[in-house]
Amino acid sequence: MKRTLALCLCLSVLPALNVNGQSLHADSLENVLNTQKLSDEEQFDIFKKLCMMYKDSNIEKLHCYAKKTLEYSLKSNDKKAIGASYSLIGEAYHSKGISDSALIYYSKALDVTLEINDKHNEISVYINIGGLLSEQGDMVGSLEYYQKALSVAENTNDIQQQIRILSNMGTLYNRMDHTSYALQYYERIKILAEKADFPDGKCIAYFNLGNIYQKQGELDKALEYELKALDISRSIGYKTFEVMSIVIIAQIYYSDKFKEYDEAEKYAIEALEMASEFGDTQVLLNVYTLLSEVYRLQKRYENCDMAASKAWEMDTTDLSIRRDVAANVAFANIYLGNKDKAALFLERLNDLSKKVNDQGIHSALANMEVKYETEKKAMRIASLEKERQLYVWLGVAGGLLVFALLIVLWLTLRNARKERLLIATRSVLDGEMKERTRLAHDLHDRLSGNLSAVKIELGHQAESLQNVRDKLDKCIREVRETAHDIMPASLQFGLKVALEDFTAQFPAARFHFFGKENPLEKRIAFVAYCCASELVTNAIRHSGASKINVQMVQGEKHIGLTVQDDGCGFDEKAVTLGVGLQSIRDRVASCQGKMEVFSSPGKGTEIIIEISV
Image (cartoon, rainbow, N blue to C red; front, side, top):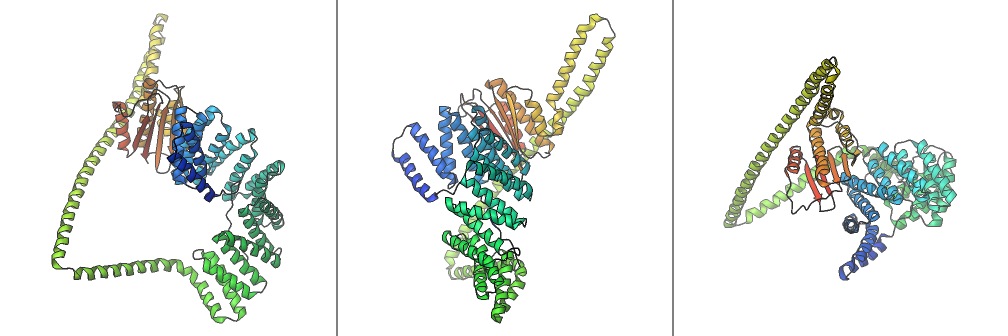
């Protein structure tokens, strides 16, 4: 009954930071901000330090201070700080699980870092986007961004970042069960780390190589690498890798190939002491289970019973471990002559498969019992109240009921009005889309065709009619361009293709797409295209922008459109929305979407649209 215990692979290149010490230092810095009068530059310096301190410990404060650094960076036009601030805000949204917003800010950070050629931050942004796509299940997209990051890191000869990226890529392939590719990346880490004599990189490479070789059954290689990883982790004080390497070494020694149970016991006890020291419950559970099997194979049944019983007491959810533990307890007690305990755990072993179903029933029964007891107490209290108090409460309840009914009625009427308006708007949009399609086809197929026929007829006339032919050529081109503007033919190939085609017309416009392209409902694609095209046209005509970024983020439940320009901008408080922007807002509302406008004089405009799909 041999099994490989589950272990969590650690991907970080450097040891974990001392969060408690950081908290104390962060508190003192916040106290300086609150009690001392500081210049803008001094405040900015503290904001940056607080961002680094809260990066791994307090996401809300990271978000808060990253926004403050962004405000100062925008005022001072410090491009490098702007890029770093965007990246930190993206990480905050990433940690909160708000993927779309994280992608938007990562994209902004990437634009700035590429503009100023900031290679260090460029690598970090690529890694962040790759990690986000990996969490969303887009493994191919994730690997593409990791590859971009790796290319930059290799060009700048940044060994630590190369190791970090290769480790992420190896783990990604490992998750996809492509262990041959994972081995290639960990081998590259080994070569880099040994050449640069970088202990942390060696530790990562040796541990992961040993772990993969163990899964593949190549135990000699696995033992060689895990012993190396153990030596290095001890020398640099890397406790996480140390205890995980010890556990794998113990598993290898008690395998059928080695059967060195004394060595397995020695390493397992060492892992047990370390896991007890820093309170890692999962490692403790795995080590106790491992020890119980080692003791069973050594025929030390009392020790087997003790270790398995401790594992049984610790675990309440993992049925696989509970099955093995129950089997070891029963096996040991059979040889110890404890028939009652052996029978008990044999019965538990048989009952484990039923407990999952029984758990739901017991939970429902417990809830019903609590509800019943609560209702009994409420009835007992109500029966002891005086009649006058009962009437008072009934009057209050009646008044509240009437008030609630009035609110419900008002909300119903208001929602009905909104629904009628929404239906009317959608009907108008559907009619507009059909009419645009019909008119575009008529212009392109009928009028353009007729003009072409006239041109052919004129071709047989004298050369003096050349001017007429030129004018007809121009007319035909204009008819086709008008038909394309009314209803672009590229929209039938998807919104992404249509927006790429549209923005390619303007030298100042750049289009970015994130996510996985899926077919959209025709009305939604039409509305999104109309909104984006009108926003780009407005920016070119009215803002004097030299650079326009159009970004589309497509998720499973909604799409996001962002149009940002560096034009003249306007004061949101002093200027009301024009007819064009109000028309866009109405279009977005018809698809149950929302639109946000951010602008200030001299700093450009950013408009964000989110539409549910």
